[in-house]
Length: 246
Image 1 (tube, one colour):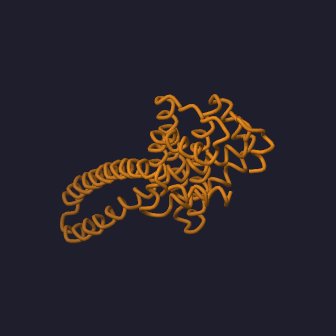
Image 2: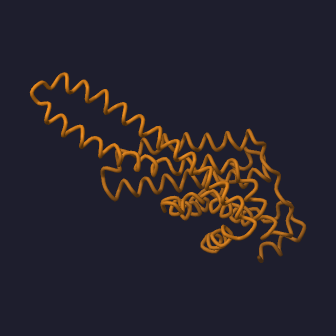
Image 3: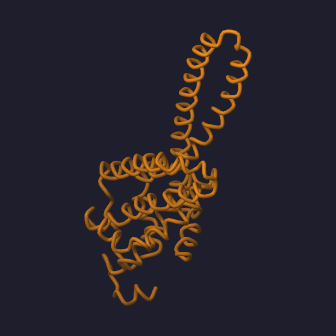
């Protein structure tokens, strides 16, 4: 896992990846800006309507309501930042569905020249996988949100959930280039522990601000390496024994 993670990190800034890096980072940044604007509008609407109702109901306590409004305005700004961090794994999972095949092909051609290149996923299938994982991420994180009040314990839950969800998503995208969806899922289940452990570096990567915009590249490359190690003889043009030795 450590070797595969190091190789994936080294590949992010290589010439074949630069174009994909610029496009994926730009797409993720635009989507996050849209999310931030949406959260800002939501909080502004809640503050405006809530403050108007409180001012009407408070009577002589209007000064205290003004202080409360000011405090909530600050908290809403923090809420936007937290919301972006919270939604980052879901955003990167969605972005990955557009660039996974291109990234995977670069890795396969560069690091596995003795094997046939995988078949790109149909666009609809890739987007559906990304949307499914993004939606599932939001649902799981909402369930884990109350535990964030428990300080370190909540952070651990969030980290483990991120590793689990993103490892599933990126492994499926890598494996479905060679397998039907049902076989790719069965392969993941047979190696569930290894897939999850490989998801831990992805969870760590996606937790780093700014750097995490490149998560689709790192995670896809990492899972391509894992899939090749789990199924080294798929599409091989050299003996499986030689591939295992690599």
